[in-house]
Length: 106
Image 1 (cartoon, rainbow, N blue to C red):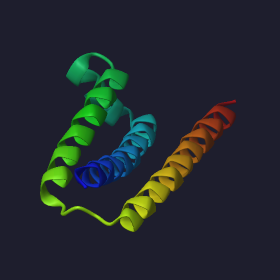
Image 2: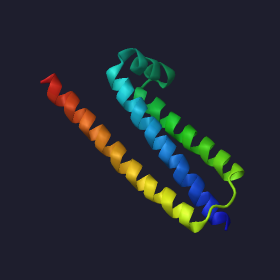
Image 3: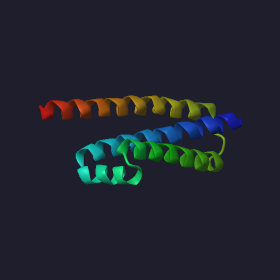
């Protein structure tokens, strides 16, 4: 049942990473000094966020995969459901934020 543990670790890592990158994206758009800081690290804020995303996901995946006991199929199903929910909410949050930002700038 190692596969269930890896699926679980991947889903939990994805949930945390999606929430983090959504927050970083919105904060960077609202706070120019933070966006400038991200840009200073790699030359562009998108590249910094990409490296942050990859690093966070991989680190969390390894930690969770090594520390969590094999979850039940029901628990894996629930975390996958939460992954879908978080993905939809984060997508809508980003869409709403950028629509608001675009329309308020006009």
